[in-house]
Image (cartoon, rainbow, N blue to C red):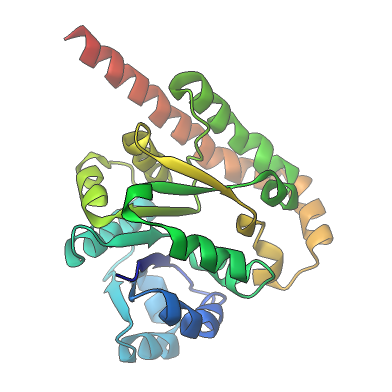
Length: 261
């Protein structure tokens, strides 16, 4: 059974839809179907892409009628995919910018090989950024997100990527996690990993190299230097790192209360 790909689509500026269209033939060669969610502002600003999406049966789209927080967008999409697919269907929860970069770069063959190699016994499987992949990112990205990995190593004895980029999971496994997801922001990603932490496998991959220079058509060194010296970028990263730390703290607090009962 071919896997299914699941990606939220928030693209009011129309930056990502051209990439999605470019890689759709490759997606169809690997995945049985694509589940996507489309934010209301994207629907309003990208009517031609909406028409394209609706006419292709490969895409099962969830159209939000009004503005929703990012965590609610993700959880609604994941619930839609899990409820629609057979329990043993392998779902690849990921993001179009990362996928488009992998498929339109020298990482293509390794990405395809890794995706197609996933078997039910491997799931849930978190594809994590390798050292080589992290080296392509601005240093502040790694330094701030490393706080989460360090805390994970301390609390759970595992190096886990809480703001993950790609997760392979069976529909039944995702269904079991969904009732425990409460965050309305990006912390939802960390909530998923917290629920899966005991059974999740991890695989470090180079194809999760930094995608922004490709997506934005920018010189990588120049953009990297800009981001590394940007206070706004630091605040942006802290805006999800701090809430995710709270998710980890709550997990430990919940475990302690469970052991006391």
